[in-house]
Image 1 (cartoon, rainbow over the protein chains, first blue to last red):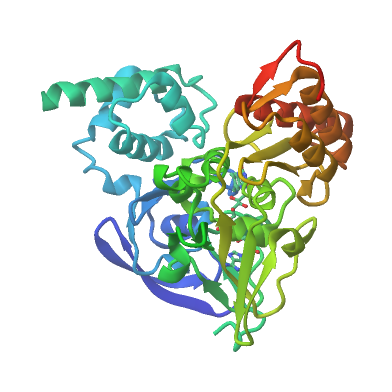
Image 2: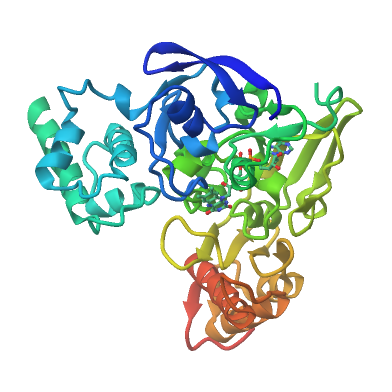
Length: 162
Length: 276
Ligand SMILES: Cc1cc2nc3c(=O)[nH]c(=O)nc-3n(C[C@H](O)[C@H](O)[C@H](O)COP(=O)(O)OP(=O)(O)OC[C@H]3O[C@@H](n4cnc5c(N)ncnc54)[C@H](O)[C@@H]3O)c2cc1C
């Protein structure tokens, strides 16, 4: 094993020291294996499935394609940072209410992607939802209930603001 | 820094580089130089005096989809929108597309059709070369050890331009065939560049010259048979292979159809028109 890299990351508003990483290790592996944040899931490791989605400096990205050491100094938000365990976000609650969770593997990535989508496009069409979530693969639901969940949040947020 | 560490791996958005590292669990041999937060490489500018747009190597596809870019280089914004998913477009950069130099790189046909210039920098100085000379072959470029792509310069062209690709689905797909068509009204020329149908991006000199002559530039009209011949000439200029994504025959056919449909969007087609 090559020499260990020592650096710190800003994750969910906290400084986290990484002491046992190798140069080139992905942010996904560092989050899961070094920092114990297992919300982001690893499946394809090539940016296709989106289950590892996190937000880095405001941008939704696949954490498997971010070299962890290159994210020093950036603000990282994972699904654990979206809401406290006992108070789910509106998107998380809508996924439960709409039955958009089946096996649940893709859910953390989708929660991140849907928050990002609704921040940018508060009232999306179904087509926009499909296009915007093209980077998040779900093999259980067939996406219908996921789209339903997104629309529920969009409607609820509009009602809330009016 | 790059000079001190000649063997350094350059990392921009990581959407190509990290796939390789994850794949082989391959540790980078030497130091890694992450370039994607260097402010100079992250910005783009329009120079009205020279009629050009210069784009830093680390500008992302999401940034290139912005209406401000689309207003100047519509085909580049359009091509950027076809790349991967939001996650990939937020990280992936134009410089990384050039660095990888895949024949399927969606940014590359646009750069080729617009005769873009690539600027490279090293401790030895900077040099600029036409993008068609930069792209040497399948995943092979003219980058020399210690060199960094700093920016790409493109002309702002008066006239319609567009990009289209075919893949197995509508989003998140690598092109089976792609084309960029640019109509330059001032020069009265058509420019066409093709992706995924050759070892690198191909231009189509014959198809370009033929259609340029046959368009009625005053009315922006073309006769249907001339447009059909354009498709045939584009297909003839392709040099596709058969691989796991598609067959050579399909690619040759599809790329002609793509180029014709793009030209059709720009022109009024006279179905009964006699060839000019
Ligand atoms: C899921 C997925 C979907 C994709 N879909 C598409 C698609 O639809 N269309 C498409 O075209 N591509 C696609 N790609 C490929 C990739 O996203 C693009 O090629 C992207 O432009 C690469 O940019 P990057 O900044 O991520 O490059 P990196 O991965 O950081 O680098 C790529 C290569 O270029 C070199 N490099 C990077 N910057 C420079 C520089 N400034 N100077 C010199 N060398 C440099 C690196 O050393 C490396 O060899 C996809 C990738 C993934 C993972």
